[in-house]
Length: 248
Image (cartoon, one colour):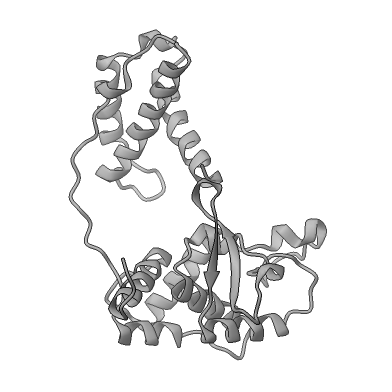
């Protein structure tokens, strides 16, 4: 699984262990699960003052169920994983941008600044490749073949695939790289804060959260009615392919 999945499951399981306390696996039973569900439904995020969404509560239960599957696999007595059921959630409508909105968003960054050119490259790459935000953040500048407009990416489960860039995306990335005079390995870097050349500039790499905030900034700036995210651009990429005749 991906590093993000490992970190998320660790977070979800930590919450359960904090709730359950120092107990042996044999004491994980339906009564404890029931109390844990109630705990999750009543929990309020101290930062947002909002309760957990129903689908987020399910993520906690999915992680717990995976842990119970592991216990079963290594012959440790505990609650059978199939006993942990998930709550029902409403299907979220599939969000994607119409062509006019997409063009407005792609034209939003100020190309006279390094940040703006980088952000334009981010938006163009997200739409032209359908990359997950974690995949985009992991890109290195030396992996892109501009002649063929392609690069390899390691996706979920460690599987490698070849990803293709549009002419616009490739041209924008090249312009962005031309203004950089640093030796840093990451493709998308921050321009603010302390410079950190050690480890090929790894600490200069934009995080997934930074990229999400970048997209959010331009969505608000141009006043889109759709609350678009990097994942919305991924759906828009897929929708654009289908509209233009690609096989599902």
